[in-house]
Amino acid sequence: MCFILKDIIYLFTVWITLFIIGIDLFVISSLLPFISTEFNITLAVAGWIVTVFYFNFVRSISLRTVQV
Image (cartoon, rainbow, N blue to C red):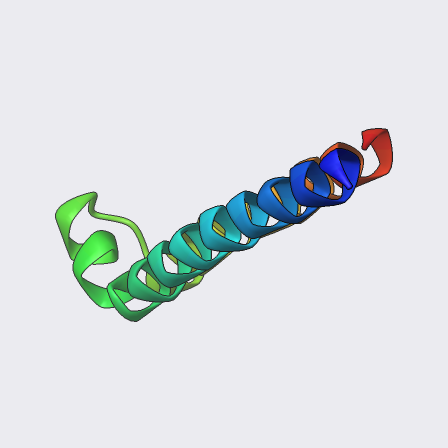
């Protein structure tokens, strides 16, 4: 019974963390025009930067999930 409770707490923590990070990712993508003007880059380059960040995020989460 203790292991089941520990697993539920672990999964809940992971879900909450992913939710918070996911919200952050959507906020960043909506701010792409402001990012591009602030750093004097095109909107396409800002989009690629965020895309690379997304791919690295997904890859790191999938590797973390496999280790569990």
